[in-house]
Image 1 (cartoon, rainbow, N blue to C red):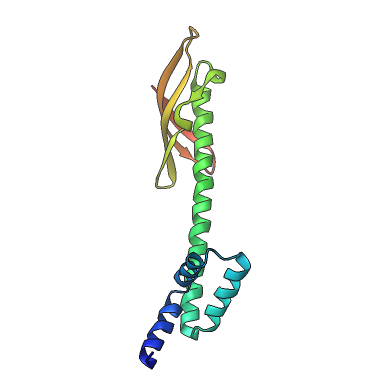
Image 2 (cartoon, rainbow, N blue to C red; image 1 turned 135 degrees about the horizontal axis):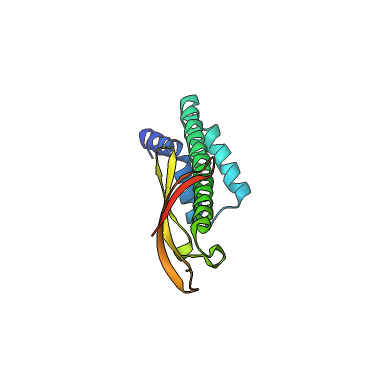
Amino acid sequence: MTQSSELKKRSWVRRHPILTLFLFSFAFGGLSLYQADRAEKALIANMTEEERTVYYEEKAKEAEARRVAAERGAEVDAAARCAKRKVKSMLKSPSSAKFIAGGPSISQSGSKWNATGVVESQNSFGVMVRSNYSCAVDADTCAAVCSVQ
């Protein structure tokens, strides 16, 4: 093998450490967490200072993206709970309420969340009726403005 092809091979491994770990684990039937950690440390040790900086910046970005996704998930859950609570309070028989398809569909609009869905509940005559609802929710304060049709 020539020196230039060896350099190209090593630089590819340095540029793609996570992909290299994945390919290595796939080829050899999986790695334990300990082995993966050791392999990652070995790859990092072989990187130049600039490559390490880029690598750690990318890891930090990935961690931040995971944190934001988890935080957003908590906000979506809070908005859904607030919407359900408000819709139940508007029904004739709140205890009979059944939210169809697991609950509201949530979307964000600025600082507010919009929740739409379908609820079944008893009317004044005790008959189960299906109604559509839509709410504008502030997940921080749990203030919701809803309409049920």
